[in-house]
Picture 1 (tube, rainbow, N blue to C red):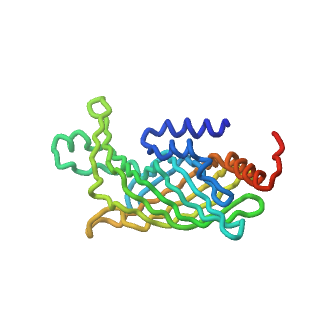
Picture 2 (cartoon, one colour):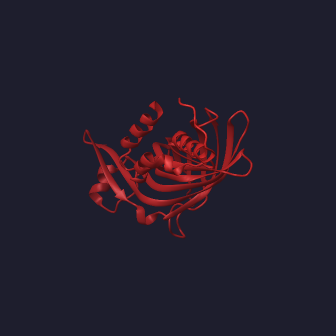
Picture 3 (tube, helix red, strand yellow):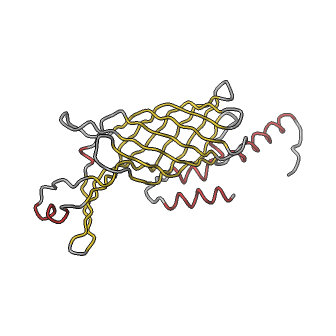
Length: 249
């Protein structure tokens, strides 16, 4: 119960997350079956952009996942949607905004690049007997918003300016991803995982644009939603069909 409350509180702290996550919390048990596990996952990601003089940026991520059991119980197909997933970089050198006043204000400042995607991982996962698992596959991203946040201390005041750069970013991002983690419990337990994304689609549009790619390291915790309730419902249905009675808890 405490774990569920934590994830609900985490969701409401991310005002940019979509209503699908709320629906997932409400109807999570309807999305589970003996061969499908549904849940929420979220955590921290550290993102950067290759071939760009900058530093990594830290942000939170939140989404939902599905694990589909394959014929061998050790193998699963893992997918879902990372609803809130910001990539980019910080401490980027200031560039001209084609405005003399703005250029004068932010000269010597820094830029933080915020690129928001809806990311869909498509991965195969293998779990060892000790509950450690590894996974690998691809990830597709659909661009939501993109902006550069200019920052500078000007005449003793901290000033900011947001420059919308969405039209300069490719709408679709794609790349390879690998990960590893640990299943805390054998049944209905939380997953603690580490996942790395290596983008293969150039970030910027234009043939003369530099070859820059998204990179991101995710540290996440995943919690099944409604798995126990779905399992109880399936057991009750089976008992009814067999004419037996389930023991009371």
